[in-house]
Amino acid sequence: MADSFELRVNTAPVRIALGGFARRITSPMVGRVIGVHMLASVAQTFRDEGSPAGSWPPLSPATLARARGAKKKLIASGLLRNSVTFEVVPEGDLTRVRVGSNVAYARVHQEGFSGNVTVPAHQVRARAHRAKARDVFGKVDAGGGKLRRRKLVSGVGFAQAFTRGPFSMRMNIPARPFIVFRPEDPERIVAAVQGVLDEAAQAEGLK
Image 1 (spheres, rainbow, N blue to C red):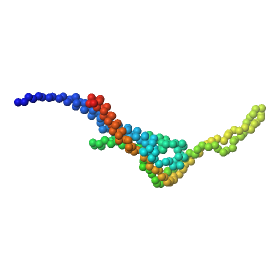
Image 2: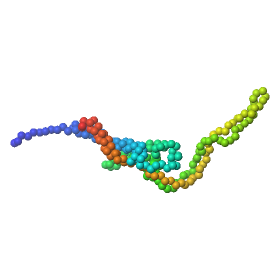
Image 3: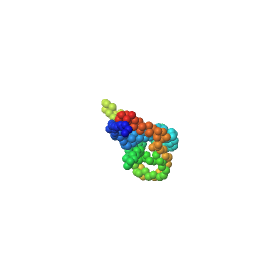
Image 4: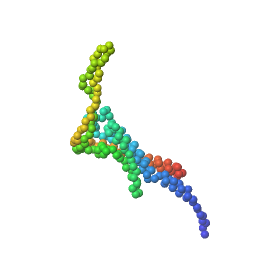
């Protein structure tokens, strides 16, 4: 009979390490890594005014007049840019990362719009300006029983508010997509996820 030998391998440490690795690396966690990257990607698209850079259509003269000096497109107040968020949604064996905005006009800028809209009745406050009224004069006691004519009230600035009724207007807003998959996103997402995997493997002694 040929010589034989028995080899015993203790796989418990490996199983423990793999279990720890699996607990560290979950689909929702990887989804959050991707979501954070996509928020940075959207912010870059706002800074570049499109992807490719500068691809958003120019603003109309009327919009520029209302922008009061704002030079960048779609960030007059920053509300739209700061409203973009993400959510991680498990769907069976898949995990989806959804990126979007809850601002009412986000879809209009993302996809564009051309058509008639009805503006409801609303309050309008006129800009303050100097009144074109005469100064008010009167006689005041100057002492010693004498009266002297003196200006009592000067013309003052005022603002007038009024209600404007509903009206219809034509709007033509070109698409300026800000939630896009930029050319560099796939490589950067893979690198970000790989970095998280490497950290988890090192923490569990697998690398």
